[in-house]
Image (cartoon, rainbow, N blue to C red):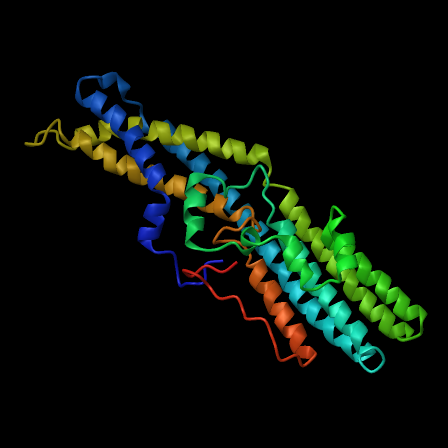
Length: 334
């Protein structure tokens, strides 16, 4: 997540410079050919304007869908924050006087669940964008914690050796950790260490965690529909290609009867570049937000949120050696 006031104009230009080069070339080719006598290259601007309207609608639709996915992901992790705090004090107040060691063990298992979940959500998918040059280059400005460490080492801090090996043998580690919490809770209830009301309260929190994990996995594993994504790409490409052809004659007319007659056609390059850059960059912004867990500067900061939850829950147990909060690097926090 970008934590600064805004992305700077220079950042945007550098981020989109590859597309600027391509768009400039696409604008320059018909302009040069037209200037040297290929007048038949002109295309009436009216149908291109109609195409531009369609492209504007579909790019806007894509960006709205991208923002919806991002905002839903943030709501999911907002719910995990609140539910974790509730889980912490309900569990502490129900068991601290009877079995404080068991409370600490279940707290640690919850930190392990948060860790396993964020590692699973950071796994790459074929449709994600972080491997493309534009996004990969920008990612060098900050660190993605899940790519600097491995899950085994992270879970060692929270689980016993036997439980660690058991969890690592499973496919969905986060799910199995929550299943272990449920099993532990059932054993506590069977021993009579908590009453019916306390058991229901704590169990409801585990159900909420499972529900939120499933919602996050749904966003992670179901991409923005490929049919909508593909048609947006194709229509945008057609529009970008045809814009320079549609503006040729209009800019050529600007010099009629003046000393620059025949030369104003060169204005076609910068103005076509500006128009196509706007549309292409809007599409790129949508792409930057459409997968909210992949590790881009526009994603939900699940690592920071997980650390915040751990700090809050450790504080509930009056621990003094709290882990440090995760701070932004170059205004980016993940």
